[in-house]
Length: 219
Image 1 (cartoon, helix red, strand yellow):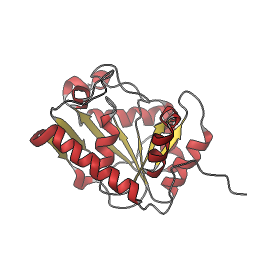
Image 2 (cartoon, one colour):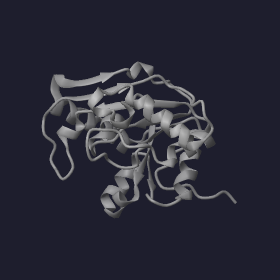
Image 3 (cartoon, one colour):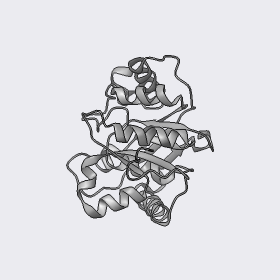
Image 4 (cartoon, helix red, strand yellow):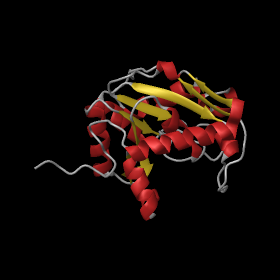
């Protein structure tokens, strides 16, 4: 018997009407928020097909909105399970291809869903730091990204995001106008097979896309 996949996994890799409407709303909102200071660099570097482990730094709740809104192909994302406590938000997340994951534990169902997406040739967004950073500098990667990379053998696509920490910082509910920048790097395959070393490779690749003050220990 096939194990049940978690809510949010869609292996046909097609966006439904809720996801399309959500993406359009996010794009409109972010363009209004940042105006001419919304910079999207390197979207043409995103492979148009095939499995892809998309890895970004994480400052703000705007980060997944930014990446998900402008990513040019279907994108699944790992999302913290706490978001699913709200019934309405749970339905939206599920229809926007978000996979709930219980942080701080070995969530086998979430891992199964993530590997199913990558195995079907899909793109999966993860935040290797595991949580929003408190300051500008990068945090070390948790073991999850290395584990996924090793088991799936999917190429890794690094993304650097900044400005979102000012537009929607911690403890603020309503975003404020300001510059927002996203930079996409080149997809690569990690040299190591050890999950900790893979995590370090991923964070160095993200750091290379960011201005110096945002690199932290990877500067």
